[in-house]
Amino acid sequence: MSSAIYPGSFDPLTNGHLSIIHNGLVAFDRITIAVLTNPKKQALFTVNERLEMLQEIFKDEPRIEVESFDGLLVDYARTKNIRVILRGLRAVADFEYELQMANMNRHLDNQLETVFIMAQDAYFYVSSNIVKEAAILGGDVSRLVPPVVATRLRAKLKTASSR
Ligand code: ADP
Image (cartoon, rainbow, N blue to C red; front, side, top):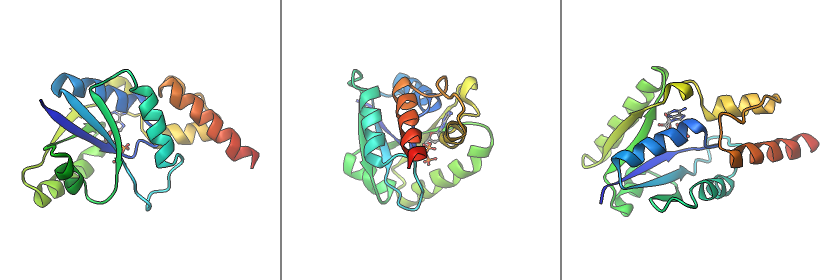
């Protein structure tokens, strides 16, 4: 059975991520979505909130597993016994960063391979950051994220503004 790890911040998951996962399921039997616990990155949603949303979104998809990890991705991949990392590529801006990461991961473990899937054109310019920025300013992002995420975003921003 072929498996891949799709690591990321997913703060929050967007339809762009979703399209990578759906296309990834054409290539792999199983995908582990791995939320990176990164204390250096300031997040809107806690790791637990992100895991809850992901679990809700993929509750009827037995080929998807949702987990969090910290530390090195290569170590996490080794403990899972998975040799493939899945990443998405958007506009050229992603390319250099992704190339660096893939090379570093290969340097740390040459048995680990990174596979890229191109973003769907509708989501080429969609990122978690741009979605958060628009939502914080009151913009309607409901066509760019799954319904669960849109609802959680609204609730999160309401409690933040009432503080
Ligand atoms: P990270 O902090 O690791 O970049 P992200 O959650 O921002 O985590 O992204 C995880 C992966 O998903 C990255 O490979 C990123 O390029 C990809 N990705 C993010 N948004 C999109 C999108 N709209 N279309 C395709 N891939 C995307």
